[in-house]
Image (cartoon, rainbow, N blue to C red; front, side, top):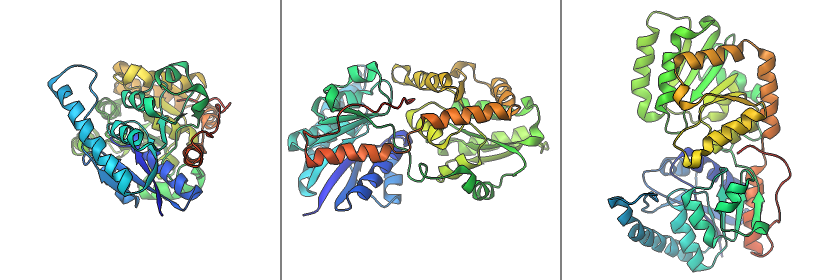
Length: 393
């Protein structure tokens, strides 16, 4: 009999990449257990999961709205249909455990796991749990956390002795690499100048309009544009527009070097090329920056649940690993002024890099796999307690 684990981790890269890392860790730890995914046809998982060689079962899912609206009326029926589909998958595919990372499909998987009476593990990435994980936690065997806070524990209906702090898994390929070893390959891939400092700008897998606009608007504010280059990942939907904006802004001025891409598949190479990163403060971005030991300028997304990105950014700033610009204050001038000051002080950048590295948890995927596999072997015998290493969300 082939035993299987079913994972729900979709929607955005913030859910997909940690779930892929966890799948690889489970397979490495127990080659006899197969790992498969459930997700939607429109989420990022529909592309990335099959590309990585994993089986994806597509189900219908809708957002869990916090306010009453016509769409809210669809939620119970859609959840019932989706959990029924997942329940049949659990039975037909001989699934022995489920792992949820939040997102739309987490609740159908949690409901189906409860009915099938198989172990359910949830992973919460942020300091404040999302609505899907709050609901799924009611039926969870165990919970794994990226960061241990009173808010996240209070928001999850899981007994304290069944909660483990694992950190947030980073996408495969990031945890075990040395940036210096990949730098030459990275500069070649992105056609970057090895004599210039590189600012890597991105807004997450979907991009961020505010960050895109500020990056283009920064052109006239650089202190030494001839010594700088910008690697800008805009998000696929915005790429054509932002590329044209860069072309119009640069004109005949070749002092600043810009490489504008819609989406970067080889993020390890983008990080290897970077001297400084400007991005949002989502849990996955924070985990990757700290594992890679990269200094950063963080722009928290102001509409995140319970403003958890601001809490993430402040944690890194307190540790000396990052500086923060509020979303409402970000424009081309603020971006360039902040980055100019950091790039002018290599010693400060190195201190920030060291502080980031000290916060990193490169073993998060293995730790999470251990929690899940322990539940498979004995649902009552999961690892107890929390790691003592302090960690930013």
